[in-house]
Image (cartoon, rainbow, N blue to C red; front, side, top):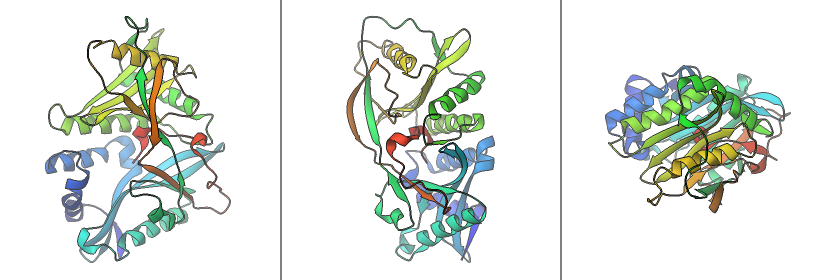
Length: 319
């Protein structure tokens, strides 16, 4: 058995097997285009790969491998991200996924990577056997406080020229945390492109992406990135030079004021514990179904004591 890049016939086999599970409503062709396009962004070319564990010409299991940079307690670390782990139904219960995960971890450790990160939708038990620990966190459902009119705030659609300012805002938001991704402009572009690609390749009317900026003195001072689908509205990421998040709250009030007579769904979000815009009401709060799990790959790097309040990680960054 060996790990190989998922290309050509191997990739097509993986896409055939996973399309109906993870396509989010895309056609088979759209699903292939969506996956290929993610690999072609500047960040994707350097930091994202799909790999497969094969035995001869047979695909035993597959996964996406992310190479991330993060900061833990003011120390820059390298992080292996593991996503989209899949074993064909006919080959399950034979240890193929476990073998793939263990090899990815060992290869990363040999390469000097400090930690591994994944998001589980099947509970914590399976990945705990590999030494991963869970960082529980909650999903918040938010509602903008309504009032006559809209706040006196200049809100416009975000553009490419705003990416450096958005990157700086996200870095500032992550600074107080014990653990957070190192924010790079190309990673911000990749995350935005990924969401726009999914919306653009979906059937008409299924999804939308909204990227808005609050501007003062010709400079972006706050932003929101929202996605909408038939299942609801998600605040994928946001940020504000005001640590209270008041401008983010005002942006959402402005957006709400566009359709005052319509009932709009509440907005789901992952927010840092101290980030509570005063214009927003928390309608409900529940444990996230996507469990964030992390493992140290070094004896001198302790991460098993991380708690939800120690991290800044946006829903749009999950994989």
